Amino acid sequence: MENEILLSVEQLNKSFGDHEVLKQIDFSVTGGEVICIVGSSGSGKSTLLRCINRLEHQTSGKIYYHGQEVRDIQSEVNKYRAKVGMVFQSFNLFNNMSVLKNCMAATQKVLHLPQEEAFSRAIKHLKSVGMAPYINAMPDQLSGGQKQRVAIARSLCMNPELLLFDEPTSALDPEMVGEVLNVMKALAETGLTMLIVTHEMGFARDVSTRTIFMDKGYIAEDDVPERLFTNPQNPRTREFLSRFISG
Amino acid sequence: MSMAVFMTQDPTNSFQWMVFLAQKYSRLFLQGMWITLYVAVIGTLGGFLLGFLIGIVEDMKISADDSPVKKVLIRVLKIICKVYVELFRGTPMIVQAMIIFYGISQTGVQISPDIAGILVTLLNTGAYMTETVRAGINSIDAGQKEGALSLGMSPLNAMFMVILPQAFKNIIPEMANTFLTNLKMTSVLNVIGVSELFMMAKTAGGTYYKYFESYLVIALIYLVLCFIFNRIFKLIEKKMSVRKNYALAIEYMTND
Image (cartoon, rainbow over all chains, first blue to last red; front, top):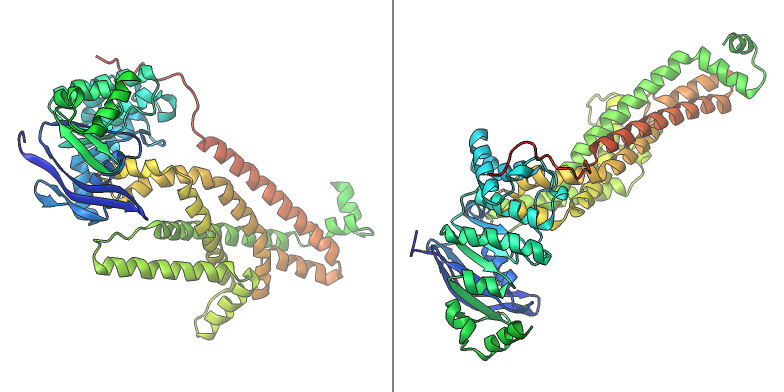
């Protein structure tokens, strides 16, 4: 899986009515990469991630997964999503299920794992995010950071090849941001391929293997963080990062 | 009790007439109550089921790459549902009862008034429940569905495992409301000869020409029935509400 192109996006455009959100997006994700997508709000980062997960549909352009075009045929999309997970800003834990059930629902229903295996897998991943003591809790009994860690564990239970993170820490207070970022950092070290939309510049700089800066729907810059954060080529990147540094 | 029995031998005022009628025609009233309950319960439950089915159909989305057969099928289903809901919400139940009962009879199919009555109640409830279910589904945060889909669940799985269980809780009060309405609306079914409470009151009152008292008797029965069911629904609602306790169950397993 290492060094193999997992996902590629070609000439992706997306408009909401007259408003063009994504313009000619071209990039690919190789196995093992941890890519952070940064940029100001409204630059199209989240929409790009949602297009990749098929929660939004592009106006034009194509997405390829293992060289195969991702089409909007429900059965194919379901299989694709089982491999390409997503973690949301608003956690989206199932409110009618306990932490454990949250982590077992999809592995049983989608992967058809027997109950014991689904259970042991859920426990394994809940432990890795430090949420094993809470398996019987309902989502509304948890703090934001705890919810997000459960959501990450839930995605991991599917054994994804690629995990998308849509601003996973934006709804959290500073203390909780740390606990979630630590989990993500540990995940990055395991070699999981990750595509992360974030406003955490420090995290992007330290953890990502590649950083993409988006501006007004375009990919303005796509480089290793060492260069992007110290010597950005695009004037917009420089402007954005200077604000981050001074702010 | 013995006082009441004594009075009812020769009733002079309305209250005494009520007791007299209730005693003399107790079998009629009980039978009417039974039919009323029977038609209302079965009709409502069937209607709920129909409403859920249509609510789910209305929530279905067609995506661009679906096969043409699937697209046409979903469209046709949606149109049928729309027409049905419009028809049944746009006409009075008493008219629907007449049309369905006499319509079916005219085709030569034998249908008992009770079955026709259940059918009318069911179809009427279904049309209203559709909107309730749709509103219930819409009341659930879109993120719940997205969370399920992002794990590879089919939209139908997401609906049954995640959305409906939550929506259901939100629409219980409206379902209770619908049932209570139905319990009372079955009275219009006397026009097609369903021997429910209203019909029985008419019969019981007719012998002595004491309609006022006879209808007072069934008013009381309706009132008591509604009161009891209302309590039951409140209890269910309470049982279904989420446990709100913040003491977590940590004893199960330590995190090491």
